[in-house]
Amino acid sequence: MTETPRTPLTLAQVEATARAAHAGQTDKAGRPYAEHLRAVAEGVRERGGDEDQIAAAWLHDAVEDDALSPQWLSEAALSSRTKDIVLALTKRAGEPPEAYAARILATPGAPLVKEADLAHNADPARLAVLDDATRMRLTEKYARMRALLGQSDAI
Image (cartoon, rainbow, N blue to C red):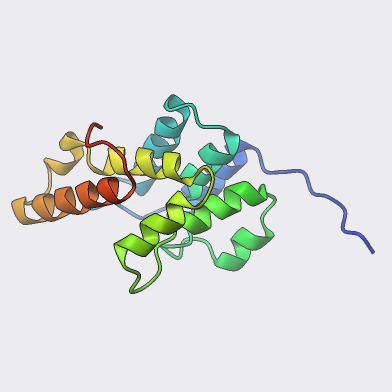
């Protein structure tokens, strides 16, 4: 018995799902988390990303943050490429940054999404509201990941 293909989620549906999944969540600066997701999706679009990558941008932290389950992702009406990108961007407990970067680099479409994510995370205006120690730690963390991914320091 063959499964009836489902209509893929539209980008608007993916956005609504991500916003609902992260409702009430804030970033390190206390801003609604959906602002980060929107910025990453827009960054992917501005960098020439396609619909699969934009969908993954909206969902890039959903599984990692337990906002959506791995089962939800596996069953969602999304392309396998979008799912692969989301999984590549999902950090695993205890995983070294080198392994995380290698998985991103090995997954078609994922480096561009991570580039947009890092660009927003490292935005000086965003970092400026953090305390000095947190700002320094995150600046170093993001620079190291960009280096592991072979991405320039330019944001």
